[in-house]
Image 1 (cartoon, rainbow, N blue to C red):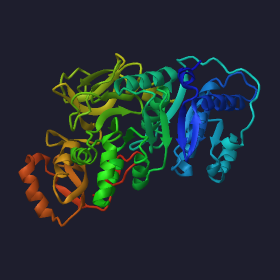
Image 2: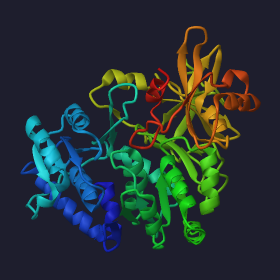
Image 3: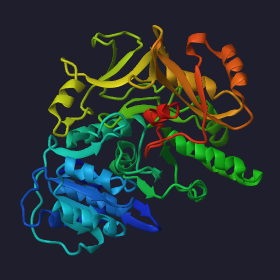
Image 4: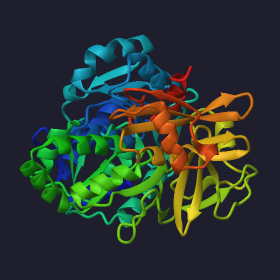
Length: 490
C-alpha cells in the first residue's frame, strides 16, 4: 500500500481539505480516490506507469485525482491551469500521456486537444460509482510523477520522481518544520510545481493536518487569516510583496488586527525565488515573524532550510535537511570547501531521471553520483548563501565573478527603488557588463542612481546599463525570468 494512503488511514475522521466552504475528510479522500483509481484502470490490473495528465482546479478533486493515479499504478503529470493550449500540448505529448482528467471548467478548452491527440478524456465530476476490482500493489521505486521545469533557457524537461523520492522529500520537511495534525495551512500556490504539491499539500496531508485552498487575492487571504484557523503559510516572495503592499493601504485599526492575527501563526515560509532582505524585514514588522527561507528545485524537492528553531539568517537559505548531503564544487566538480561553488546534492530526495532524455540525465550528475544544481553558493559560518543561478545570476566581467542577487539586494535599499533585476549583458571588451532593470517608486534620475551606487559598492559591480521599467517578467511561481529581462536592454 502506498505510504500516502497508509498515513491518511491514521486520520480517517479528520478534516483534510477545505475548499469553497466544502469540507472533505481523510476517509472521503481514500474512498473517492480508490473509486476513481478503479475507473482509471478500466478493467486493467495495473496502469504500469501509464502517464495520466490532469488539469484539476485546487480542491479536494485535485488530491483525489493525484491519489487515484498513484493507486492505479500510473504516473501523474499535473498541468498548469494558467498555461495556454500550446504549452499544455507540449507537456502532454512530451510525457506521452494517454489519459487526460480535467475539472468541468476546462472542458471547452481541453476536449478538442484530447480528441486531436487521441486520448481517453475524463471529467472528474462525471465519474460516479465504484467499479469492482482490486488495486495493484505499487512499489516505492515506481515512477510516481513528472513535473516540468520552467524552461527559461531550453524547452521544459520532465523531471521524474519515484514514490520513494516523494516520501523522502515529505518526511524530511515534516521532521524539520515540526508538522502536526494540529496544523491548518492555506494553499494559494499553483499545483503543477513542487512548492505547492510537496511542501504544502504533501506535508499537510502526511501529517493529518488541514489544507485549505483559495485563489490568491490579498484582501481575501487576510480575511481567511482573520478567521483564526490558519497557522501555517507558505508562499513566494511576490506574494509576500503583494500582501505587504496591501497591508500598507489598510486603515490603522485593520492593520493592527491583521498583525495581531499573523503573530499567532506557527510558521511562515518563503521560497521558489530569492527573498529580498528588505522584504523579509518589512514582513517581520507586519507579522512579527522572520520568514523561514529554504532552497530547493523541481529535481530535489527541498534540500536546504533555515532552522525551525534557532537563527534564521537573512539572505541565507540555511543548512542541509535531514538525509540530504550537500557539497560546493568548482567547474571541475572538485570540492570547493566554503565556496563559491556549485551546489551539488546527493540523497534519497533526488529525482530519478529527465523523462526520455538520457543525455540530459547523464550530464546532470557527476561521475560519483552528485546532482549538479547549476546554482552557485558560499558556506557562510555554517549557513549556505545563494549567489545565484550559475547561468544567469553569476556575471563574469573583466575577470570578476559578480553575484546579480547581491547587487539587487543593494539596489533595493535605495528609497526610490521598488524592485529591480540585475543581469549580465554581452560585451566585447569585458565579456559581460552589469545591467539593471529598475522599477522606481519615486523621482530618480540615472545620474543620481550612479552617484549613489558609487558609495555603496565597488566599481566593478556597478551596473553600466540601466533601464527604467513598470514591471518585471515573471513565471508562474513569481520568479523573474532573466532572459526576458535581458531583452529589455536590446
